[in-house]
Image (cartoon, rainbow, N blue to C red; front, side, top):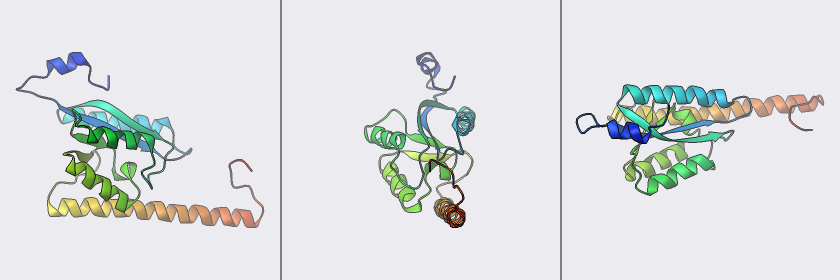
Length: 172
């Protein structure tokens, strides 16, 4: 039901063309799971349906950090984008599912823009005005800040547990 079938493509008419898009979804840790992907998928598909779009492909990175681009599905999406795809838009749930590193987020956003591909966050509205661009950039920075603060607290907690020889999780 998610991806557009060949039969559905044939129903699109010049008077009512459907925009072809892809969906990128990611979760980062064992504390999240496929339910996170199901929720992101649901929101992306709902957005697509409400905006005369068809999701023709999904790129999913499960248990990969957003702090860098070393994610197999993300890299495949970038490679596909470089090869003149039938789609010109990537739907993401929100900016922190795309990246949690502001400089890489902007690097890939600019690369995709040069390829004629735009990114749409289905839960955050950023237009192409100077204010919209500023707000998206601030969002990327806040995502990175939040990730860095979370890592700082996690490492501090682990150090405190280690001081009292308490188990921090994982395989000892």
